[in-house]
Image 1: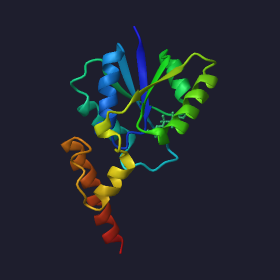
Image 2: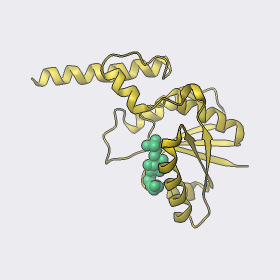
Image 3: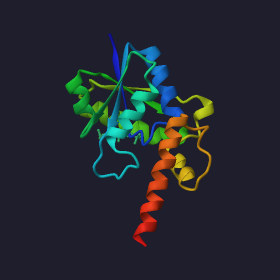
Amino acid sequence: MITAVYPGSFDPATYGHLDIIKRASISFDRVIVGVLHNSAKSPLFSVEERVKILKEATKDLPNVQIDSFSGLLVDYAREKDLHVIVRGLRAITDFEYELQMAQTNRMLSHGKIDTVFLTTSLEYAYLSSSAIKQIASFDGDITPCVPDFVADLIYDKYRQKKLSENSDV
Ligand code: PNS
């Protein structure tokens, strides 16, 4: 039985991420989506919110589990006895960063953890969480990029941000 871990920031999960999760759930017996709890970054959604979004969006995939981790991915993988990392590759621009991460994780795990890349489906190749957040912050249409309930949550966040900015003035 092979369990793969699909790590990421998922701030928030997009249709591109969900496509990778769905396809990984077909290729592997079990997939753990690992949401990075990174205190150095200031994400739009808390780690708890990101986990909740992913749980809702993957509720129809019985072999997918959502979890969060902090620190090194290889330490989390070792703790859970996982040997395969899944990452999505959108374009050649992702390659350098992904190659570096894959090789670093292989070195840190003494060759025990490998990374498998799934190429993002063409219709989602342009998507990124940062672009989606930027579009939403200017009230642009993000409904082709994320499930409707996620779009509502993103718009709500920016509405709250604008309200608190206005009340500070
Ligand atoms: O969605 P992202 O932000 O591209 O995901 C990046 C992630 C979470 C996979 C990567 O930053 C990570 O694994 N961070 C944990 C720290 C770590 O293990 N670093 C060493 C590998 S370079």
